[in-house]
Image 1 (cartoon, rainbow, N blue to C red):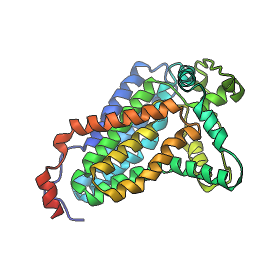
Image 2 (tube, rainbow, N blue to C red):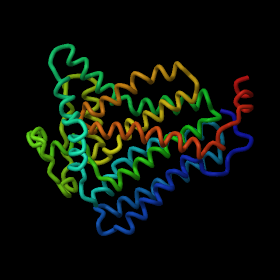
Image 3 (cartoon, helix red, strand yellow):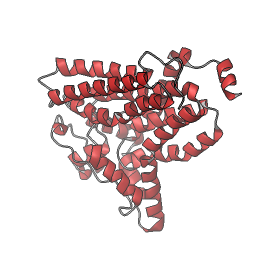
Image 4 (spheres, helix red, strand yellow):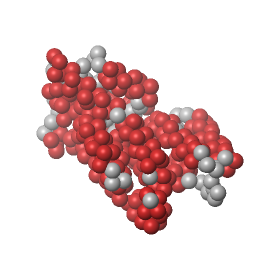
Length: 328
């Protein structure tokens, strides 16, 4: 990698997005210190993230090149795996709202799509196993889709790499802000807590602060011997928490990725991602991670976040003249 002649002296936009979220949530921890379960660990975790960010900035300043730029972005994306369960530590201070969302679901659809969808398609035989694996494949493709789009911009549209990365990261943190203040856990946790018989009777009790101390969820439906089934179950066991159901960030972020693929004007990228995107949208309801209204809200918020962030950061995009020069 060639050393940059004019390296950036500022933090990248993705790092500023992280810092803004860090400051906001730190204030929540400080003001609600006696209500948070693990305030010291949460604050020290934030200190470690700041040190990591500072260290990567120092490395970039010593060796300013594309590789160190990429490292700064990739590490911030990887740290999302730490920020996600952190939303649970914050939102369990508030009463659970799933009884309201499950009631809305029932009123809107006349049923619980997350329950019926999994039951209607979890039939036996080769066809049932194939469908189940396709659903699990769709859900498991979430992080690979993020990696593909970010790396695509790095290798093919480098002038817009930092901008595209910012749109993805800022959207994640906007979703996380919603998750902190809107404690909805989704069917896999709520159905497990109140019982499937209760749900099938159309009864949706208020569980209050039940999820403060209970994190059990339903197993994914369908073919239990499939490769992607075990991939999804292992991911749930490793990092899933009763949090982040409404709106679906899986649907929202993947919608943003599709818009970024469209923005890149690369049909191959768009068509490669499209089947995984469709499977992912349906799979969030199929594996009971989300209510159908979560997925619909994720679609809408993802589109809104994309266009708002692209509009607000339009000045950061390269001019058409710069793009033409890069292509030539």
